Image: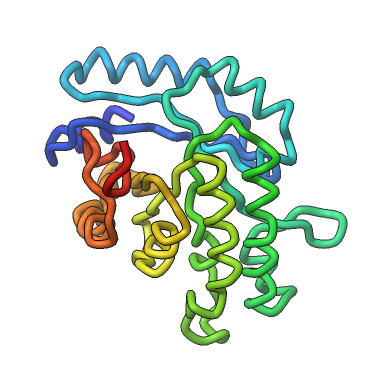
Length: 237
């Protein structure tokens, strides 16, 4: 955390949010909330001029409602993301690489997009939907280039439901940006976007943020108070 904060100061970021993972379908260790909050406060003390937000990324919270709600009550996070990393495969849960090995690539994406509305409607404790394009990270090369237009109907349905819930779409900058999805989000009534670099090392913080900002502004969103803040659409309060 301290190295990330130092990097944020060095590149001129006014704020940073640490959204550690709380996953329930993987073998990842349980989030050490006390340790996380202790490290966060240490960073706030060391970097008083940097706004440091607490946060968490909840994986599949609609399947683990009680555990996710308990964590949010204990953590009182500044920013909460909701995300989906896997789907049922037989009697177990599987993440994207295993799913692509077992099913046609297009079927995996459509199943993923069909589950997202259940996530949105099944857990109201998060304000930002993270990495909607998550399946693209593992899209198999043998399936050919990924074409967002082939899934436009499904994506627009997800975006309509998300907009209707009053929540925010994340523009995840860890991979090449998808202007089509952001544009459809605007057209379906999305009120704001949030930038997330999904950085797992200090060097990656704010990666492609300038590019993402230019894309969002060209589509119709306007800058928030800070680059990492929500960007409302033009005309929104």
